[in-house]
Image (cartoon, rainbow, N blue to C red; front, side, top):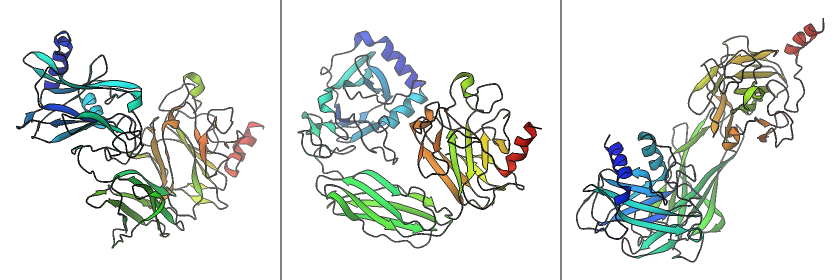
Length: 468
């Protein structure tokens, strides 16, 4: 309620704001990163909205009460974040885009994050004080100040001129690394840009390559990969530099093949001469390379109007007309009894405990709901009541009755384009959109992705009955 009151006060007092520079407050803007090209908030997901950040510093001799302090954005001074707590003398506080999204959501505002424009913008630090909204500090920057993972910071802290901290993308600045949460005069720990895995979802027999891209202006002295298999004793080998240099490069290590069902957890430590950065834990479960049942097509965003009636029940529904298609790509029948489909959060469909013998080449399709009409063979609606596939990105996995991973696919924004993402041709390793595959139809549930008809032993009887 206090935050809501602050917002009302700001909206009523715009006409009485004090110009920047007239305040004697010791709280100052200290560093801003408007163009993230990698993960900065520590969630291992590089996001242009959530990984933006703004740092403030207390340049005074006493603790600063942040309760009435706000971050605003743009000429319109839109409120994007409200502080809380206090800040000790000399300490910094970093607000990431993800923090702003959470604050906005909690206070009934559109979740725009910090909304720092790469073409130029103004960041305002404000405080509600004695009935007025005082502009404590501001930074106006232009497009020429913005580069991926380039920060704009005061040097020295709080009182110095604005400089570019641009070691990762030299733009004529200080050749120093950004320093979120630390003094702009400090030597920050190494920054991890990407931790990759190839293949992303290993099967038994696969060697798994862990790849790390990292940088540090003072030079990275060592990169270590710690990994544990099935929660037993693990190892911590040194990763090898495969490209670039010790201040900005790529390191790699290969984990030898594991057995079906093995669980591998791993994390990375990147060290410079005086400090280190340790990643969160990551992991994967090894798939059975012998099983050739595959996820084959996913539709998270049915086209608008009746064109998106994928289940053919006469009504387009954003949830009911989502679907996941599975196909047995192998030469032998597979018992799918008790198997489950998951998205990134929970089990969305569980297949019958018996009678799920799937023949070679046979399709199995699960719709979000509705009444699928005119399909032969194994067609279901989600046993949980819906598939709940996110248009902006999700993870779909197929697991056997013993919880071993059979197949998995993760997608991003391509899921929200009114068309399926699919293996093309069927059972292929590569995934693509229906339009990228050159198909006229935006989706093709329960038939081959080439646009033909699925004719299998289980559907032949249905087809013959049509022509009696």
